[in-house]
Length: 469
Image (cartoon, rainbow, N blue to C red):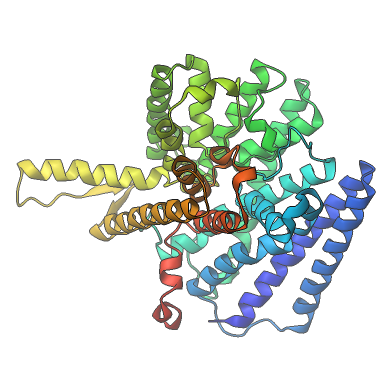
């Protein structure tokens, strides 16, 4: 491994997080929350000084970096970032201490959004709400960037699933093009969030709700934990704007990926968009049969497939939904180039086409049949990669259920906790905050990070020969 390049890149990321700390300190100061402002300022100063010193005292690496080095950065980021961003949560978690603060930071960075503290009983301060929003943006940017670069280069989850025109592995050092993708992802998220937040403000939504709603929708997270338990305050227009934001967040960079010579035609005919529409219709119909009105079913289905959990209508009616229906859409998830969790639509498309091909071959034994995904012919290696991912995901869910059950959670709660953390869907875990003891919190943090690594990233990481190639 190129240890020097890895340390320098992580130091640069740490320096960026330090700037986010300082911005949060300004927001807390404007809101007259001076204790929080000082805490943000101290944390940002220490982290910025540490990152800056490392960058100044180390030379640019002479060796080329490889995809393996990028995977190391991805794993280290998801393990270290929750630690360096946890301190602002310490005053709010009470007796929970550092572990509970770590849970809060990991939940926000992975855009899971669940909180151990009931936000309806203890409303978030302006500074802490802004910090949660910042962590959602950082985490969503990291998720998309890692998918576009690391997972694409290593073919994790099936060759072709993460490939896009935004990244081709350079002949020089692998890290040379990674900053471009990070900037693209960050700008796309920031612009989308700003536009949605501006529209919400224009229609009379309070600034706090506009910030939380816009960031939650675009990052498919939950900045304000209460937003999964309270309907939009401004009624239909508010809910519609959040619905549009959730659609944008579900697809991530997919829209930009399809903008080429054929423009809108490419977008409309994209297989992930078609699969998403079919999934929304199916889940909405099932919700209607379960007793939800049609419009509420559509909103709930969109929010669940996005793995966000934002309530677009009265959430009291969601209690009538059976647990299987609640878990089904979050397991599917959004597009491969988005921050949405779950298995991802692209993988389900590849598997469904392979299954259809098997049925065709039953009638034409001995024939050679192939299928394509986004114009790329897919091989048996593609299907095998997706199957390996699904097996890994199922095993992770099963192990998660066993571990959460051992911490004392009821069986149904253990299932919800396992699926909710791996799918980064915080609304699935609502109501369990008081029941999550330290061991359950540790398992949840690991599950949320594993969900962002898309489970199978740990398979090569645990293989010593992978790092020696």
